Structure formats: C-alpha cells, structure tokens
Image (cartoon, rainbow over all chains, first blue to last red; front, side, top):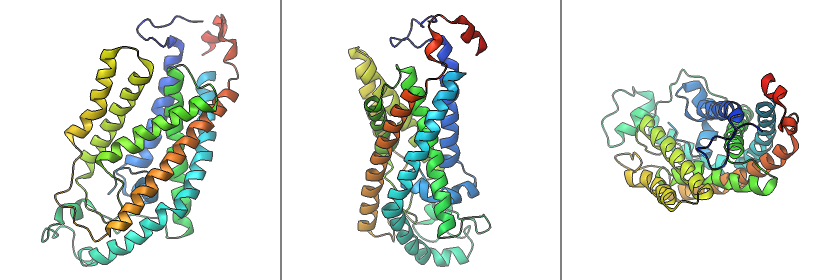
Length: 58
Length: 255
C-alpha cells in the first residue's frame, strides 16, 4: 500500500490521484463538448439531448 | 494504468446502457414535447427568421431572439431517424462523461462496492446535475426566452460544482463546521440567482412547459439511478490488475 495523503480523511493514495484526475477530466471534457460547446453544429446535433438534460441551451 | 483502464471500461459500458435507456425514455416523454414546442417556435418567429436577426430589437423579445440564433447555414440533422440517432449518440456520450466523473469521484472517496453505493452516487449525480441547477434554470423548451447563454452556463457549472462539493462534505465529513460550509455552498448559488431573461413571455403554452419539466426530472432521475447502479456493478467486476497492489512496488513502477 502506498502512503496515504495525511490531509484527506478518506485516505486517497497518491498513486490514484493521476488516473482519477485523468478520468474526471476526460468525463468533464466529454460532457462539456456535448452539452456546452458553442459550435453551432455540435449544438444542432445534440439539441434534443441538451434540452432533455436541462443544459443551458440557445 | 490498470485503474484508469478499468474505470474507463466500466464508465463506457454503464454510459452506453444508461444512455440507451435515457434515449428510450426521452423518445416517449421529452422529445415529443420538444417537437411540439418547435411548431410554436417556427410559427412565432417566422417573420424574424425571414428578415435579418440584427434588425430584431423592435419588440420585448429582442434580447432572447438575438441570443437565439439558429444559423441557417449551419448543418443540423434531418428530422426523423437522423435526428434520433444524433440524440442517442449525444445521450450516450453525455452518460459516459457523467459516468467517468461519477466513478472518479466515487473512487477518490473510497470506491463503489456494488449496486447500492452506485445508486447513492447516482442520486447524488441527479441532485448535482439536474435538480440543483434546475432550481434556478428550469428545463427549457425551444422558443422560450432566456438570458445570454454564457452567463447561464457559468451559473449552471458553478451551481453543479458547489452542490457536488457540498454533498461530498455532508456525506464524508464529521465536522460541524464543514457541514455548515456545505449548507452555505448548497444555498449560495440560489441566493446569487441564475441569469434570467428580461421577460418570460413566450408563445409556448404553460401546460406544455409544465409537462416538459416533469418529464425531464423523471427521466433524469431514472437515468442517474441506472447509471449509478450500472457503474457500481461494473466497477465491482472490472478490477483486473488492481488487486495485486498490496506491497507490489513493481506494478507501481510500471504505471
């Protein structure tokens, strides 16, 4: 077991920070692209999804 | 990298399944209402569309109409099957994205251990992404007036972020001070208030909008529950290469 970072009560091991951070960033990038991109083409393609997920639209 | 690979694998499958479920639910609930609202949108704005958008500020709906530029040249999927396919793809992509964030957060907080903890994280996701931002910016149908897109997106993202942190503090901290901070984070975005349009006047009927809001929350709750449960079950299954980490420095080096 690798060292736990003392600052967190949960004990998130240092070796996990990089893969978990990458996972979260990848997810946020995908959601951002589908739901928040200002590109007109992306907006049109994902239009019904944006409305149905209550993302800010138009 | 086995942790990254396993989480991505679980998120992709969970997102695929829950995104498909969401698409099926939407095609019976929200999408017919969107299509119905669009008949009002084109009917109400026909004059504005055939003329120039820039010359719009003649009536009260000037600001939303200007912000609401459907560029005639921009590509959009043809109505019917093509549009359905793009909606399904966007749903599945969103679900995979949400699944990645959900699994990363859950793993950082101790990991999912089966469907029940997955369900809890799914409900937290619903509160964070659907309910909390929806309190200030209710689900909207096409043709409804809204403030500028940029500030609304910033408010939406800030609210989701504050709610996520607040729920994490409430669930994972024993400190009363941090609980108080969590309450402040939950309430603050709504005290600041979402950017609102100057006028809420719209040609979209109120009952159509009410049905749409209900449909959005209902479908999103089921979707998030399904995503969480699927993520929990799949995460349990895909742990290849991770179990051996106790005392194996060789595996750490290979990362």
